[in-house]
Length: 143
Image: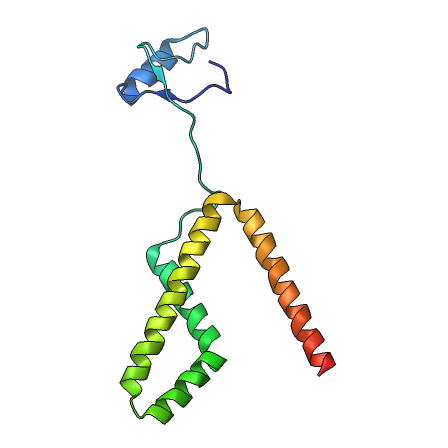
């Protein structure tokens, strides 16, 4: 058996049959006694193991919650609520807007993930954040 060949499908063979074949073999023939079929190559999606749904949900919630506290969107919502005297209507409108923008972000992120490697996405995000930071520093020093 070559080391670089495709894995073999040995689902019809019991573990004891394989052990007996290996034990009885004096010429180090490592193939089982019955015919086996090669299967396609094994494809691994990512070197990282999949995270649980609760971990992804919790991380997303905490990150977005902390990012949104005190930003201009929350301040705008606060002012609209105070001016309109209809806090529940403002809440529903702002919640719908946040859900819509989040949906757009998820759909765009999914589309990008299907077309680019994770490494490319990470590097692109880093470059974009660096550019935004430089623009903010430039604005502060100019103003």
